[in-house]
Amino acid sequence: MRCYCVTSHGQPLELKHQEVPQPQGTEVLVRVKAAGLCHSDLHIWEGYYDLGGGKKLSLADRGIKLPLTLSHEICGEVVAAGPDAGPVQTGMAAIVHPWIGCGACPACVRGEENLCIKPQSLGVMRNGGFADYVIVPHPRYLVDLGGLDPVKAAPLACAGVTTYSAIRKFGERIHEAPVVVIGAGGLGLMAIEVLKALGGKGAIVVDIDAAKREAALKEGALAAIDARAPDAATQIAEAAGGGARAVLDLVGATSTVTLALDSCARGGHVVIVGLMGGDITLALPIIPMRPLRIEGSYVGTLPELRELVSLMRDGKIRPAPVSPRPLDEVNEALQALHHGKVVGRQVLVP
Image 1 (tube, rainbow, N blue to C red):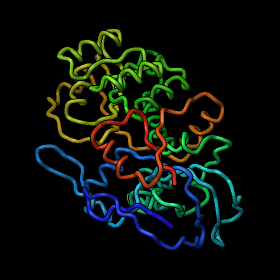
Image 2: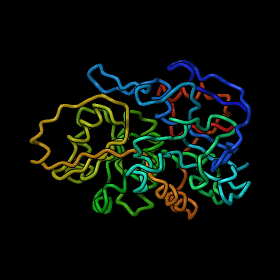
Image 3: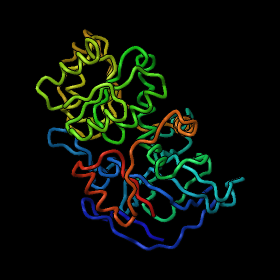
């Protein structure tokens, strides 16, 4: 089978030909039908996260080893299962929950495998979907697509479940005022759909790219604001009706977190998802005096992915814009994402 691997950080993915793996124990062999490309793949390809101040977090220090087949947004068809997998429907079209844990730590016991202290995530710690086949450790990580298009559904495994989990952290705020969404890429466009499905007041979208702002308006954003405008914070506060009550930062850079905090009303809640990097200096008395809530959100849980897939199957969430490309164009797709030329999501098709 073909697989495209990171063999050296920052260098083109390398095509390798390997034997089709045979599932052992509880494993399931899935023939890949679609595999999305996201910014997390870009960070793994680069080999580090920017911590600001010239500091970097090496992915090697997190236990990520090369060579590695990227992509954690995987849809495919069940081909075979190991002897301990139990009843598995061969031929079932499924989306794969990639955020796999050890199964024994407190986070896993709570059902939050995405927060596991010893993660085994596909496309991050284990080989992912930029291949003809992928091994899934257990059939419980397969969510029946129920007739959904694999190419359109693949981003649900990361872009979808990440925004869904993050937006749910705002609780009732989404029904009280619009959510400010910083970043109009694949996650930002998905956030608009999630807010509609959950009955929210809607999204005020912020981005530096005019084409992405236009795409957000077409998807139903209430307003689209240029993050580089000198008065961007004022525009956001006015659009939100006197300051933002809820800000979803899908970029996670020094400039965007600063803008989020500057835009908040008293009692504002900022959820940071993006990993673009940097740091901020914040006067600590400001947090209790305003008061502000600053929270991180990392991908999502298996139950949340099941809920999200159900919403799309029921027609309550439309797929975010996707651009399918043949798997052998993966390096071109990676460069397009690296240079910020992608509206929506790129999905590679073997």
